[in-house]
Length: 279
Ligand code: NAP
Image 1 (cartoon, rainbow, N blue to C red):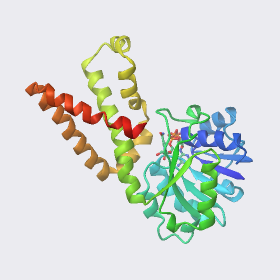
Image 2 (cartoon, rainbow, N blue to C red; image 1 turned 90 degrees about the vertical axis):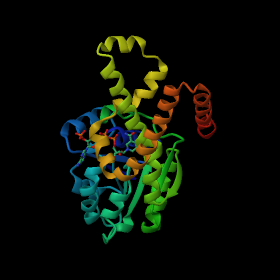
Image 3 (spheres, rainbow, N blue to C red; image 1 turned 180 degrees about the horizontal axis):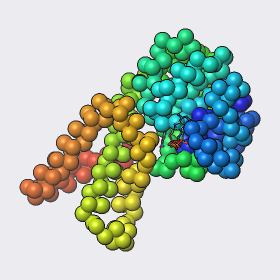
Image 4 (tube, helix red, strand yellow; image 1 turned 90 degrees about the horizontal axis):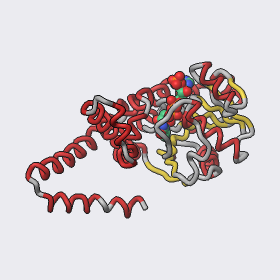
């Protein structure tokens, strides 16, 4: 299979490594906005060669969009205009705006909406790593609007990594990801700001930072270029979850003020139930 990857950063690059290593891809063609990214991707052997978008579409069997989600809104219709029998998939963290954008496109069937649920806080081709997706889960959305052969090929691609494949409608996907991914990023950005504003002497933070602090604040290293388009596209769902999160913080605050440590203890125990879900 020849695979064109548009946006050769963390996700596109990591996917390229996996698909080349496991033999699913015989060739990876890279497309990116910046020559510097393509040069890095070639140096790191993420891609076999670069091409412009039209040429990559003409030559590839599968076109993977892995740019930030705002860029996908203009890229996907353009790509669908140019495809014949090729399959187009995206890896974006939000689904509904993109799905709606091409709902009436005559080539809609060639597009499969997907979201591999794996990542790190780093970006760009230098952040691409092997095994990022191994044994994680990917979500395919609104598959009833995609051609059967296109779904089968995208499923085969993910299963080759190997990843588990699950199905959701796009609306449910955007609600669920607001809960399991988007809110934790806002929470981490806010925690980083809280600490940075209180502790002016950064050296002191590093001296004291233990595993707990570092792991809770890890996501605050994430790129604003990648996250702002996600928050813009999933604003309503993220606001709902954020309101609930603020309520929970307010509960802890109120218990501390009242020195009600019995209730505080119970709330921590209630939150410990997450162990069962995540194990
Ligand atoms: P990334 O590392 O920043 O990579 C995105 C790449 O796309 C960059 O090389 C960027 O170039 C390039 N690009 C931007 N606009 C473009 C355009 N119009 N045409 C071609 N290339 C373009 O971001 P990422 O973390 O891989 O995220 C990629 C996608 O995966 C996003 O849609 C994100 O929602 C999704 N995703 C991310 C994660 C995660 O944890 N990071 C997990 C699952 C899914 P510049 O850097 O020069 O802008």
